[in-house]
Image (tube, rainbow, N blue to C red):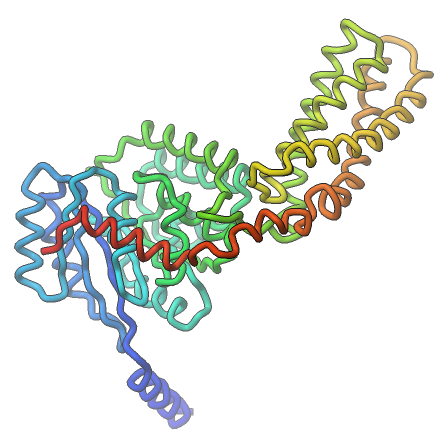
Length: 425
């Protein structure tokens, strides 16, 4: 067994020695970090990268007003593996986006300057990207069995936030905000021009767009130590994150120059259920309000009509990823055709409920109508997928972009323009 293990190790060493070197740009975004910058960079420099990997540390200073620029320039002058980039606009996300888009490395990555995440996770991150097993690699503090040191308030906020992302955006990754991530150059060039946020929501938006676009995301559980001196305003950041989530839900699936491909069937079903719950609740509320002023039949028609219009609009954007301004009216008309089917279901439910008497008659009627409405949604999903929002019906819209420049070219041009706003030392 010892001989076999030795032979395997020799084979691995030979393979590593013959394959091309993988270049990595590890960005450290900073703002007024004079107290910790030098020590953190020295720690990063002391870590030996894996064989076949060449790491350049880039200090991305976003408009610091203390001694950070002087310290960063000195570090860059003293160490050939360190570069310094100065941006005159504040924004952690802006700094990462501009430096990454200007990068020519095979892999781009970043770590927070406090080094709260175990830096040793960089090597396996780079390896899964280099091997083609993933396009994006992230560190996660929310997997079991990890040594995590942070206050109870931050722990609760982090878990609630990531749970909110799963419910509201339908994403699968577990930890959006851990300050250690890596992307392949291809993923970076395609995704970064789409990311609008320039501050702390940048990470969440980047990962959500990566997942929606079909990029493979691999998570690494990692030990993590909270920085008690962190300058992040948790309340303000949380509020901005919520606004970012709303923006992504209402219009976040638009790509540069074309639409994001529709989610796969499994994701569509989950999104459809999400919209169905909202529509059903809306229907129930409208019906209960309506019966106070009109007959049960009239209240049913009004509630069903309004909830169907809302359902069609939400499914158009949220479930089937249709963001084009074209065909909105056509989609609504087709959705209203499904309204006729729903009306048949609920009218049958009304006929059944007509025999209900007593003080609970209204509740019984509502229950029957709700069940009939839920049954109709199954058929409605099939109609929406195969007819109302069939991808073929939008071929003209997609075809209109057939002569647009590739996303990679757009990204390169954007990086070239951004390079005018940054200074390298």
